[in-house]
Length: 323
Image 1 (cartoon, one colour):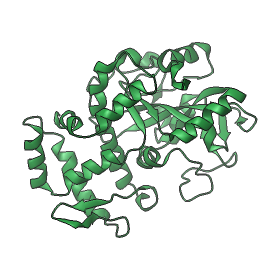
Image 2 (cartoon, helix red, strand yellow):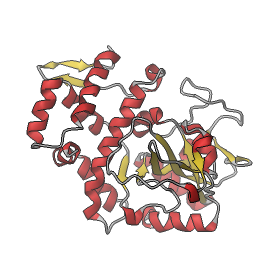
Image 3 (cartoon, rainbow, N blue to C red):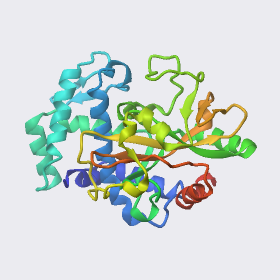
């Protein structure tokens, strides 16, 4: 699967990764690991596919692509005002099939992609360029040891203005970490629109039993329940299967969970291990974990345990707040 590595040399994703490494001050000594941005592209495609295949696609597949017709620069082949999900699915299927190719230069692979579907390559460009989040694959030395998956990412989905407001609030009230679970089909939108309060809106999938806000939990198993992973597939780390070594996502059945930083002001409502934050500016994503078929979730992680907090700070460092 060399295609996505080759794509990174042509698109801005590599620059995005470098920006995250150096501007944010996170993992600043690991520039050689920037090549793992290839898996980021793979993940972006998987998220797009999940949203497009969802029964809720008319609601959650947002934004819809704006892609110029390669045969007619004055026309949009994919137009948000004239949505055609079937045609979009056909182009995405071609993107997925071309991923299996491992031989040839980037131009040769692009040529083969164009033969399959002339809209496949433009769609792939859009998937990459429309991502507004800073997402970087964590090298092994910087992965959180208590999350037993090799697919770990630094994820900053908040725009600079929100991060600035978050830092101001943190100085006043302090912060802590908690998990946020959401089905993978929702992350196509989150990476482009940010983590929002979906309670009592058309975006809400689960109930809002504890009121309006962004739902979080210090306990991983609770948030995994919102991600779509069945609780029966969650195990104590001692029974974990061996980690998948591939740098690319091999499965179509993916579950994911985010680790967020949340402001500990009086606005944060704690109902046991279910937390609700009604102020969207008070929640920022920090890490993202993906589990494939054959990988089990980490059920007994508690972000309030000192050893867990110490591990989080080891990875994230303190430079993320320096500016």
